[in-house]
Image (tube, rainbow, N blue to C red; front, top):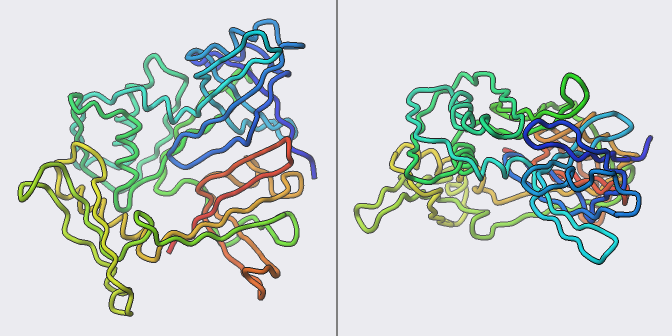
Length: 358
C-alpha cells in the first residue's frame, strides 16, 4: 500500500485555474468532508521556499486551496480561503472552508416550485450561484419524485439554508459538492451532485477490519435531546393557536413494544408556511431519532486502508469487520453509510464516520 501524500494547489476561485503549486503549505489538522454541509481547515504556509505568487494563490475571498492524492491523481478536498494572517513570523496562517459554505453567501431569489422533481428543485435553487461564482457544475438527474417548495427573496434565506431545509424533509434527496480536474487538467471544477442517496449502497462494500487496517474504533449511542425521540412535532412560526404545527409523528411500533414516550418539538427553519412541509420534516426527524443516534468512528491507517476518493467516498456503504474488542468481545460485522470523513495524511490516518440506517 502507498502512503497518502497530498499535492496542494492555490487556485483562482472564479475559474478554478491553478495559480501556484503550493509546495510549502501543510494543514495543521485533519481535512474533512460531510454530506450536505461545509467543513473547515487551517493551514500553515512556510515563506522559505514559498511559490513566487503565493499571495495571489492564497488571497482571501478570491482563491481556493485544492488537495490532490499524488498516488492516484485524485482531487480530495477544496476550500475557499477566508482568512490569512502573517507578519514577523516565517509562516502564514490560513483558514479555508469547503464550497458548501459559499452557498451560504448566495441567495436563491423568489422561487415558486410546485409539483417539481426534487432534483430540479435543488437545481433551481442553486442556479443563481452559477453567475459570478466558482465553476460549479450541477449534476442532478431527475429522481422521479416531485415536491413543492416556495421561497421569497424577502425571507433572506440563503441557498445553503434552503438546501438544508429540503434535505431535512421526509424521503428527501441528498447533495454534496465534489472536486474534479477540469478537461485540460489545468485546474478544477466542482460538481454539485444531487441523488436520492449520494454514494453507492451495497452489501459488497469495501471492508475495514479490526484488527487489521483499523487501529481503533468507537461506537457512540445517544438518546439526548435532539438525537432521540419516539414522538416528534415540527412547529412553524407564530404564537398560540395560530402557530402552524405538524401532527405528532409517533414511533407506533416502538411504543407498542414498551418504549417510553419521549417527545421532541422543534422549528425546522424560519419562514415555513406549508403544513405539508412541517409534516414531512416531522416524519424525517422521527425516522432518524426513534431508536436514537448511532455512529461508528473508525481510525484506520491510511496507507493500509481502502483509499479515500478511489475505493470509497461520501455516502458509500462501508463494511466494518471486528474480530474481537472490549466493546464487542464476540466480534461484530456491520455495514453502514459514510456520512463524513477525516483525513490526516501527515499522521497516516483516515477516519470514516458511519451512520447505520434502519
